[in-house]
Image (cartoon, rainbow, N blue to C red; front, side, top):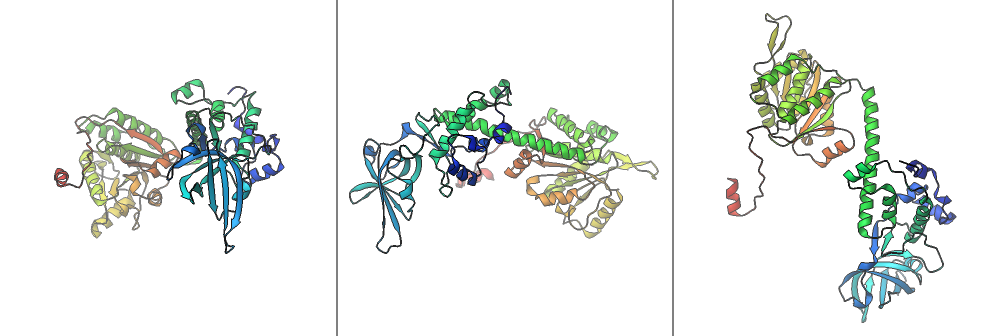
Length: 491
């Protein structure tokens, strides 16, 4: 990181130390939540005025929408005849011509647009009484009248930053630009410490932090501002991720889950009995999950993969890991059809596997898999519920019926949730509550924003299956339109 300024140092310095920030501005900045130098530097422009792309007033036609960079020449306010409304008129000049501005019910514009003020305007050109005008245009004040404030931002090029400002706090964009410019000048001797080395920056196409802070506030071109924003966003996510990992590790150190036996015979027999070879992705996924299952902290992992990528075999391996240690497994699917399909698949794959059974003649029994849905008859439901309570049911496949209706487990060790985006967080927690901190594996082929958020915010670890098993047909996606020929393609 070198001898550059760290974020902690910037956070410890007050904006009142800057020459461009007087008592009145400091009060306004505080009202906006800006008290430290870091707060000021992280108050990024909301847009930029590219003076090379501005329109000349002399070239504007009626109906044009344009951005104009001009100076206020005159301003006046008048009341309507009924004295209920105020209309503010202003005249601006850009070196090529004059243009009228009209504001309805905005009396404060008279104070904002004093003669000599430099403004950036956006609006549609209209004609009124033979004159061109903008009605209620978007206004960004670029600088105060001459002599009122000194802009030390170093903005001399074609790109001018426009900051989020506050009329209530009486803080304007030119004041923010001056304060930021003063701050940047103070940082010049040391620059900013960069936690990323050259290799990391090159790998992610990132500029260094010093250049990022300068280019976000004083860009020479719009491309420089975009590159700076990319780097600063990366920094924000990096800080967030480091904090989340720290929190997650602290919670894992305090959590007490189940240390599963991951090298037992049942899983080995299951893999040996499969009529196909596991893909490299499946083996890697099984290894990652085994590390979680052997750890004392409960697993909370997402298994993501396309349809046909082999997620079920990986999930079944996790369930059998629980079974070989004397625990039970639960597999929850969003629909009865999916639950029935999974139960049939599991029965076929596990038909030759046995588990120890003390007190029986042979000392072992077949792995018992049951299906529990809302269509399960009452007698079968009672039989399954009894088997779950006594521990004789090793794996239960079901729908929401697993979390409602008083279903209880003897020793739930691993819970698998298929198509996890179809379940709410509370439903997932209800299944987890059926055991004493069981390990949870959620699966999806179609991650949604909520799932992505869980990954980003540290709620889930991720394992991904990209490789399809041998012999699987490729996935084909087609768009079918409303015409008769297209409908025929579906049938």
